[in-house]
Image 1 (cartoon, rainbow, N blue to C red):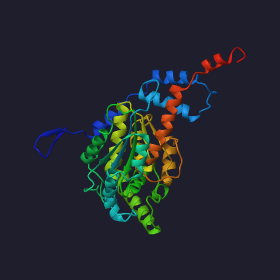
Image 2: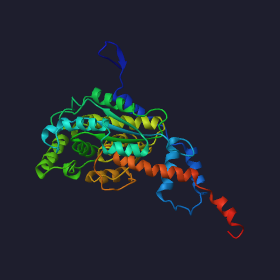
Image 3: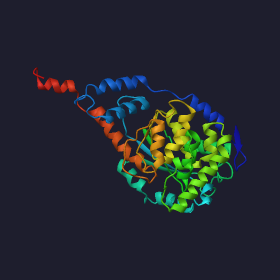
Image 4: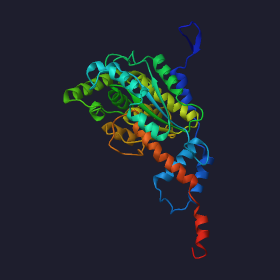
Length: 349
């Protein structure tokens, strides 16, 4: 399909149906790289499994980068920003204008994620998704049309540039933990009480409004949802759709992806529901303090790399996890071989 832009020319436009077909045709793991990584790991200068999960992470990197040894030389951090109509229900501790203010803070270098990006020497990108035009209030109607959802996903695909060897995916959007709770409940079942949390803070009245909004959205849409992508467009948001698009592009481009907290993982869950193994190229960077995140990680069989009691968003937990991934890759590629060490020790070894 195509759409006419403001200049009167036609531009290609992807549809949700085409996106679903793309996910169904995902490339699988690079078995040769995985096998090489396992064999190499067995001859490193350490007892077997002594590095624990670092060994698994190095093998995972090789498998999804499609090369051995795995390297992290050009990490990328992408933050998707969007606003939500459901904020009108009083579900958030801050007004929607704070989303744009935080995006400007990122541009000025003042966010926590700016400091973490600098520590990684990572490419840092912020993808704004129509901050001045929030999604519709999902308690009243679908948050997005099919076209709006597909466009946001296509925009997210642009985050994965050639040469990137790992990407961290995060978000910024006032009210998006409400959206993540509603989307998670739609995909996996349960009511609002099982999925909501404090988000960016607030009093009991705000939590009550959050619970009521999620339950209202589920009551309105749950019986009409036809697919995981339909759940996304009815109850999700532009930034969640952008993250989904980035996950798809990462899989197609053989770029391992690190998910941030509850919101990014809820977005990724759409891909998991679309295709078995659809998130095999993704790991969860950290366990958010938001209570629904642990439940969601358990349902997706994803064990977060870190648990630091964080709940900031902005891809901060995912960025920190890349430090761990980089250490895993360096140990895997640059450690001495056990066979060489034993030669030095002599026959008695």
